[in-house]
Amino acid sequence: MGKPRWLDERQQRVWQGYLHLNQDLISVLEQQLARESGLSGADYRVLVPLSEAPDGLLRARDLGAEIGWDRSRLSHHLSRMENRGLVVREECAQDARGLMVRLTKAGRRAIEEAAPGHAEAVRRYFFDQLSNSEIETMAAIFVRLLDKLRGEKA
Image 1 (cartoon, rainbow, N blue to C red):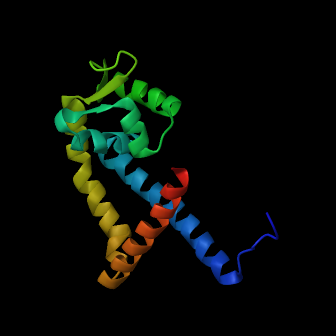
Image 2 (image 1 turned 30 degrees about the vertical axis):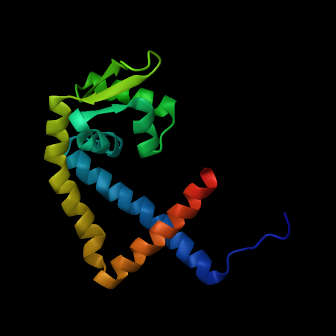
């Protein structure tokens, strides 16, 4: 493996800044969601891809892959959301072992009510603090980093 390549002072400052920004931003956004809509950040994360899917329906494994959750975490959270009437689980017609997740009318109403306030909070705490040039630079950086990470997962 060789000698460790430690972070220099500047890299350490950037890395710690990124970690703190991510933690604090997620916390503020989740508080806003809970306060304004009663949804958790996890609820919102599940509802977004379902709301964008045709007929509000996705295979559970595809939903889990989309949001980066393992099967167990997704299953437990779907149970909580199902108890609140936001989603229902259905058998998969093409694969008896598969499971489908469907957005209910209450789930669609919840995401439609939460989305405007969430988008405004993302703008206020993130995008409004950046210039157009900084946004373009960050977009390019994020694409490059995600491509590297996802390429190594494959």
